[in-house]
Image 1 (cartoon, helix red, strand yellow):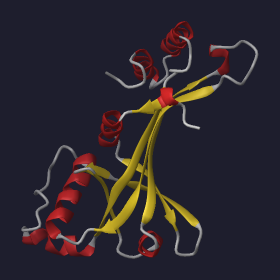
Image 2 (cartoon, helix red, strand yellow):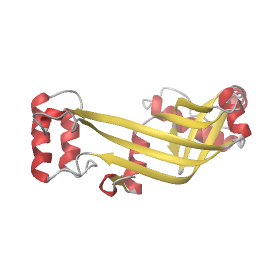
Image 3 (cartoon, one colour):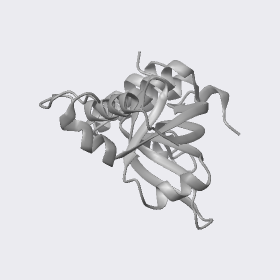
Image 4 (tube, helix red, strand yellow):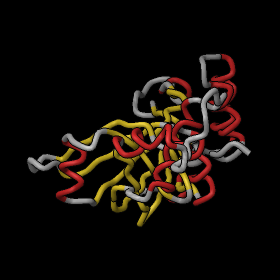
Length: 202
């Protein structure tokens, strides 16, 4: 059962999707086995876009059954058991953010949408620019646009879980934050901000 205190609202989920660039697509493979494929994506115009070859197990599976789930996840900090209990291992946990999207995948055929999606993907990976804008009307891109598959996942449901100790009493939560600041591992300071902000950075 998903705990209500960890549920993220839609705005928090979208902010997370816009921040991250990679996730895992799960779907039914053409051979009947479930498949999980890591891929780069762009959250663009309310959809998830990704690209790839026009052939392969991903394309075959989606062609057979376009239903899919997409998961984006970030582990922020491991919280050792001894932060909150001197004896038991049970309290050990991870503070994290995750978003799950369930929907239907379709191949983008319209050149302008294809170019727009690829431009969004490239902005994630190459925000400094250094290239001619991807434009369906630019003949230099015509061959590339025809040769690549661009897929759109249209969300039917979107849920987020942001766990930063919301289920822990405030005094204990602040103690965890102080221990994280003392530890000083990469990500600990950011995690403390989220603990003190109620789960999402404000």
